[in-house]
Length: 233
Image 1 (tube, rainbow, N blue to C red):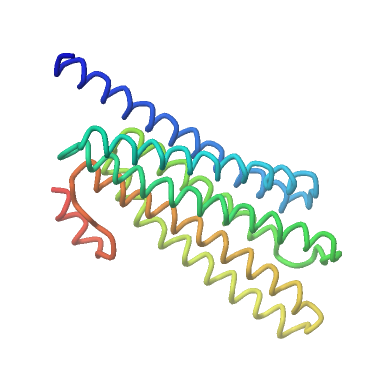
Image 2 (cartoon, one colour; image 1 turned 60 degrees about the vertical axis):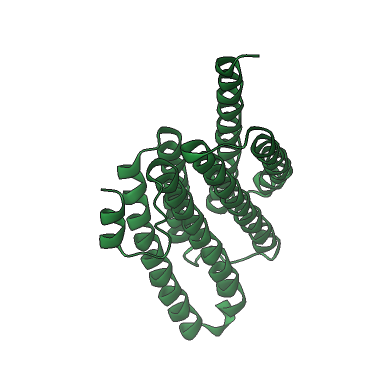
């Protein structure tokens, strides 16, 4: 078997792994969109659909992880190919955790609905932040597919805006609880929902960092904006 043939097989394996990662990402995006719909419309049926997708996401993570391990052991990749496999491994971990957050949101919404939560609380504000987080995840997956460093840098910076939205929402809930103690239980549920949404943004940022690692070989975790800009030059 020629080296060229081996190289073609390896390229096909890498392409298949990348395709499955994007498939997994699409499922997690769907989970988030459905969770947002459930929150906005207080739909029990939709929360069940989110939880059904969780099983598919978990299965894909295990399968892709197996493919990565198998490819590494057989091909012993170097340089950018190795970075790609390491980066993909980081991506699927963060996708699975983002899916966990979507499932957590669905479970809390289900409990929220069954408890007869008042509609006067600012759930619509939370739906806006959740939409922001879902959009961020979609964009970071697109950046990873294209290994677009510029887009990845913008996503990392934008996660700070999502964090600010969370802090603003937290202050609003505290005001509601102070004004009417009867809303404390429901407000705490909303607070946990908001934290789950904020965590989705964190996972999107982590995938963006993995994108930069694959494309440039630079580890930009726990760095400032200036350090990240310098690292990708």
